[in-house]
Amino acid sequence: MTAPTYTYALTNGNVANATEVTQNFTDILNGVTDGTKDLAINSMVMNGSYKATLQPYVNAYITGTFNVGGTKIGASSTTFVEVTDTAGNFSASTFTAPSAGRYMVSQIFNVATVSGVPTAIEILLYVNSAVVQNRFPRIAKVLNSFTTGIAANDSANATTVLNLAANDSMTVYVAVTAGTSVSFDGSQYSTLTIAKIA
Image (cartoon, rainbow, N blue to C red; front, side, top):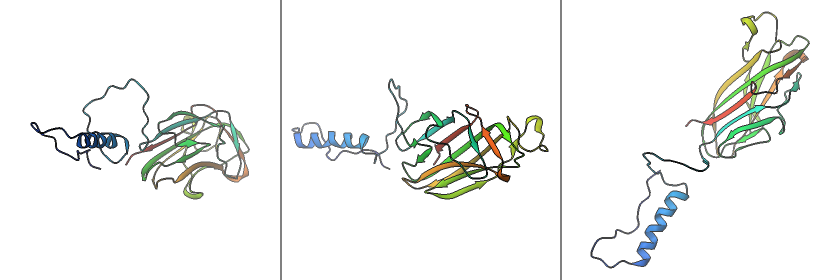
């Protein structure tokens, strides 16, 4: 994008033309509000809230445990608590991209309880209802033991970079293999982070 410019050049000694002056002020106003111009600012002190409409950052955590069996399950709209949502793009467990670009998506699921002997946790990302990530992340085991299956206090995490178009919708799902059941921890140990990086 380009910097704001004036339509008319005003010089000393010339009679001011109200139409031209008004147009130049309109150029400034449009340049800082229509999203089509860049502003170069050396430093800024802000006393109010900040909303980066086209540069979103989301951080949320799970509140209340939720159980997962062999079928994929996404956290419900009441499960995630938003800590940060700079542009208001995250709702009902779904993120909607405000603009095209590359987005980093990081997911951490902390295990609370286990039923049976599940062997793997699968983290899936869906964009516009189609799977784009189908990942079996390595489980971070207590005492680094990887021989006893999944147990309480283990965690699974995955980080992905996605190319999203404007208005693409993305939802995180999780599943457990072998038809067993895992209850994921409802705390800030189970988190979702989304940020536009390019």
